[in-house]
View (cartoon, helix red, strand yellow):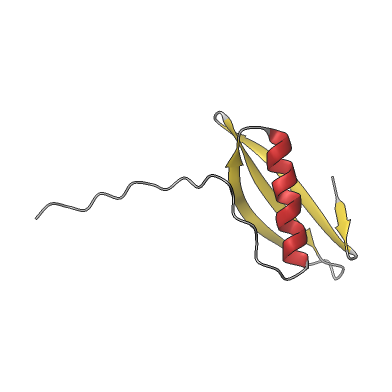
Length: 82
């Protein structure tokens, strides 16, 4: 599905990852250039992931800061013992 914002095509998408849904978006410029913003965050349902992808896409087009995902998973980094 394409969403148009100020003449720029935004292609939001959702991918399943285990029990969560990952928001993604690609920006398609008028000159044919495409910009992927990659994985934007994980959500409990596909509707929330899709809506967040649209929000991120419109923020990118408007040159505003991208919104933060409500949940951010961080990998645990264990430092070696001395």
